[in-house]
Image (cartoon, rainbow, N blue to C red; front, top):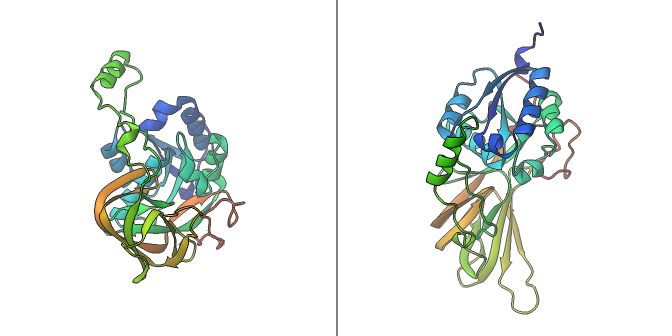
Length: 294
């Protein structure tokens, strides 16, 4: 009988969306993880069970099998429980994984599962807003892409239940429910300095956490004829003020709000990535080596 060190004890949380999107990839990920570590597998039916499973992880390393929404959900829960700093997350992407891949997670199921077993912990910066929301990747104002509807958890062994659940589930919002890009008047302040004020219309604002405790801010002014030169800034806090604006934070659209402040928490969370990851390829992976285990 195989034995594993405490560091090889995994809590594998399989998000319902992953089971619906690609059951074969989920099976492969489970097989690879179970072969290389002592893996306890949890199959939550929804966000509440997901949160309970993560909260009861004990000394096991949490591994999320799911899409970008599942990754953001795990980081948000750990941040709000003030347990993020001491918990390294791992993820095997199944479904929409553009965010996870931009952070350095391999896109293939086997490669991602191998990275969980053989990879290294990397500390990453985090954007946190004044409502305790988090941003792992890029913040965009206004939102420019539609958000896919959250899948409804279904029981695969009960076909009649699947049909009934689809019938009763809320209809996904049409693409027009997410505002399209338009002229926006915003005041953008970085560390208290005004980058653009309400008298200057803008097309878009992007905020991205960097690698040194600062956020990169890009403001695109409204252009007439020739393309306007973007306004660039960086700092520890970013405050945006305007009339009922919406914003995209990773995979979700929030708002409308009239004011929101984001601050950068340097090295606030850890993600297990392949040991060969290097700065710039992919984006978001810091050059510093992983911190030694205490």
